[in-house]
Each structure stands twice: as C-alpha cells, then as structure tokens.
Length: 289
Image (tube, rainbow, N blue to C red; front, top):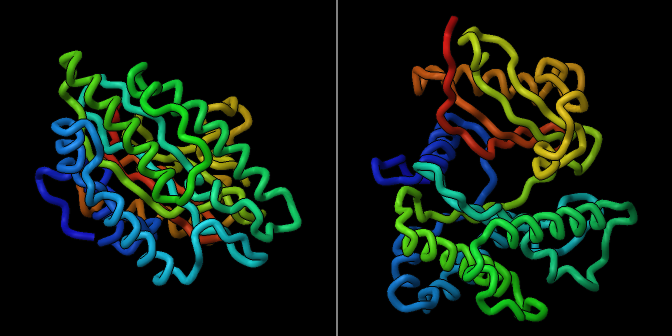
C-alpha cells in the first residue's frame, strides 16, 4: 500500500499506516474518486471498472490461494466487503456491505456446522441496512437485478447505488464527504472460539490516561457491536484472558500508533483464530481532566 498522501481518504491513510507499522490489514483494493466522477458525468460506472475489478480479484485469488465463495473445511471462505471512505462532515453515507461473493457460493460444499448460515444471516441484515441507508433515487436504481452472475456483478450493483447516493447528496448541496471506496477481504470474528470483533481507543477518551479502553464480542462480527447492549460487551482488558496473543498484538500496535501519530487513535479490529486484523485506524479524541 502506498504512503499516505494529503489527498488520500482518512480511512485509507489509517490502513496504509497500520500496514507500514507491521499490523495485519485485510487484503484489498481501493476505487479512486475518479471512477465516481465518470459516473457523475456519464450516468454509469466507468466501462473499464468491470475489467479492472475482474483482474484485481483474480489476482487476489492467486495470491491468497483460494477461489471466491468456495467453502472449505479448514479455512474461512474468500469473500469481500465494500465500504465508503471517510466523511468530512455531517453527511450520511451508505452502510458497508459484507460477505460479497456469498451469492456465488450456492451449490458449493459447505462446512457441516452453522457458519455458512451465519454468513447468510449477516449478509441479509447488512443488505437491509444498506438499502435503508441510501437515498430514494439510489435505492430505486435498477432495483430488479435478479441473481448475481458473478462477484463483480455484485460489487458493481452496490457501487452503482453508492455513486447514485453520492450524486443525490451533491445535488442537495452536500459536498463534504470523500468519494473513495474500499474493497477488502473479509475476516471472520465468528470463525471459531478464538475469534472476536472489537473497537478500542489507544487511551481513555474521557481522561487521556493510558489503559485498556474498548469493548469486544467473542464469536460475533462487528455488524452486531452496535446492536448488542453494552452490558453484554466485554471490556478490552478481558481479551488477555480470552485470546492473550491478540491482546498482546493489539497493545503493541497501540504503542506503535501513538509513537507514529503522537496523538490518540481509534481502532476497529477483528481477531480470526488468534490473529489480529486492523479494520480501521482513525483519529481519536479525548478531553483530559
């Protein structure tokens, strides 16, 4: 991933820095704002975007050594998420979509447990939230898509709706948001008993003091963090008991982050089978007492 530039989206800058600092970041690609500008001008996604996505995803399959959507007994399937870049103001951006590629998994051999069902449930929930978060024109655009023929068709379906949403925001005079899109390999907080999802600050945002300040859920994806009552979430310090390797990795990463930025940071993470993955690294804020 290239060094962060002044024009780069804040989320992507954060992931770029996390990679430089040696943290695991899910493999993926970014779609530059130029693609949206073509959409705004021509009313359709750029003609070359399909070919570019096909080429990049095929390259990822070769590098990772898995086929998209294929379920195997000993490893998670290769699926993708799609999310918007960082916003710069009070602008509502569409929900991220997760488990893209799952639609192409029909007929494949699935694990004998309920993991595939969990992915389907999560996909359906996110699809409803995504549909509810886009503006009316974006939601209605080519709504009768039918079954997706490929993972690229599925990505383009959601990209087009996000771009239509952007266009409606601009027409309403709301300009303060970035137009970057991020496509990333899924990592699974519900893969096994040594997996979780969480959010944390590098220090207490109320006092500015160092320490464990965050929440996580064992064997639950990040999509459920907002839906889970706070009393059912675990405090970050408990991660040392549940998955000590991940706790040590996270705390070491916090030290590297604050050394790099000289300021507190907010981090979203997933632990998949004891391995820590950083999903977001953005500005934290606190008011010291």
